[in-house]
Image (cartoon, rainbow, N blue to C red; front, top):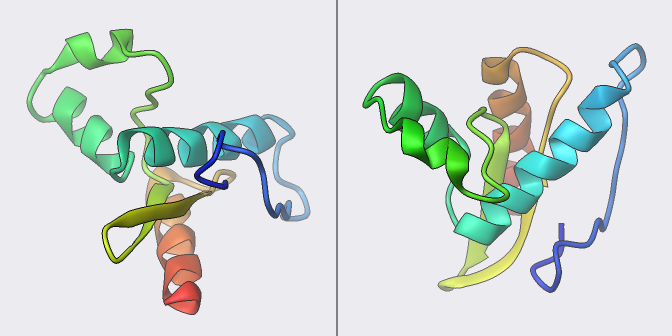
Length: 101
């Protein structure tokens, strides 16, 4: 996702991934960019700390697999992954982040 308006810059779908994973991955990337934090933060806040009010925030998703791309303190985009388990989605996002860095 690009930082200006959350527009999709690149996309790839794994063979056999459910079609819903397309929208989920975009949602994760958009939330990571909008809130400038990994979506894992929201998952932990709800599951570990019982901050259930977070689900009322527009655009929030409480599922791992969304990572903001921040360089020199500026948001430059975000990565969102879906199609595996949450932990697998997170690993794939971090691999993508490592390639960019």
